[in-house]
Length: 448
Length: 108
Image 1 (tube, each protein chain N blue to C red):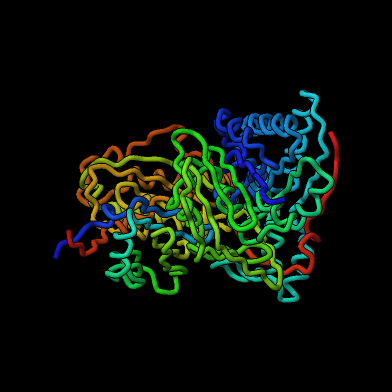
Image 2 (tube, each protein chain N blue to C red; image 1 turned 90 degrees about the vertical axis):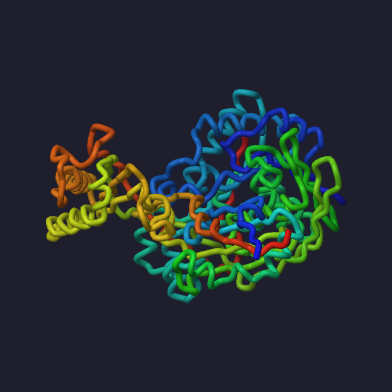
């Protein structure tokens, strides 16, 4: 086998893709359709409360097209990080959708599912053995953190896919390292690992390397290089756009670490070969020892309420810092003996609402300010209460020289205090050493 | 000495989260000539970043030129974990503004 053709329809399953481009790409006769559905990009609350990154309708729409293609051409379909966070329940949901759509259309497939939820007691054993370390600027993991996290998943490497692919037409996996479904077939057939991973790393964002993530990308994996092809008139797959792609959302421009090893693209060669195609070669891969998998988890840290208020009086605006300091001090004082109080924060748009401490412009020149309160407490009721007291304090603060004595801000909405529900925080983002890359990722098989 | 603003020299100048704990900045220069000039000028340094963002050196995780992409990447420890209490920019995509003040000496 000298060439493996992989089609990735979009950068994130559920975001959609132009059908016309997809069927054009299918004419290239891919060996496999591979797509990722997950990210930590939408924040910790999805891991915390189990919500999906896209709506069910979005997933049905995208999966229906992919199943039709897989059925017609009799090619496998690999979907990773099901549902966004890639938890077991989201994998189950995707399997359910696949079965429903298949039954409606008379498709039959062998399906492998690979779970990625990690057993908490296993993690604690590994912590005790010193086999868990931070994956970035975060404190070392404790048993307490493990208990607090709602669900903990780990990004699987390619090995579970290598095992599942022999007995399945469709693989639906939980949380996976993003390039895995794309790299899997190449690695299975002994293609150069660096090329497989590099191609996977670029293709997992769909057509983003050519300008549009919500579009298809074809990868032609060969023994000495891979070629990327973008579709659609607006796509522009250039040497620079492909080379620059590995920068996106990454810590380092040319070292990309993952389960099993680190991809080094510092010496990669990128060549434009016409017709929206770029050829890439000369990437390197450094296998890792020990093998580590990245754990992700989040814990609930409270409930929040907010109000949104506008300030226009120039004298009040000139005294905003003093006004808010006074309100904050007074609130902390009145909630001093209340264990439920967590915090009160004011976001001031027109001053430094977007950049906070990074804001280089220190002097307010705006004629109006937008003040968004963030009241945090252990219960929604207390968050509402803090928010309410803050609101009253802001509206009636008697700053020096005040003439507009009826009220200091204009509220936009009623209810004045708006409950926001639970707030979460990533508290698990750590690497765990494993002897067997498949042991934490159980595979099961079903049919439709 | 004539200078050009960094906006004129880049096709991309952005910030984004790199995972939930880090904030990364990409400056992708418009051509190899511009990239080489900027790199050689030594105007953009770790010290400049420390000053623009008012952070200590240990908050700078990456400061790296990448020739193949004609780009400079800088990664900082995120001021707070993503999307939790006190979040002001979920995706981290509006934090690039201090970089816009950078001027590079440039012969026409």
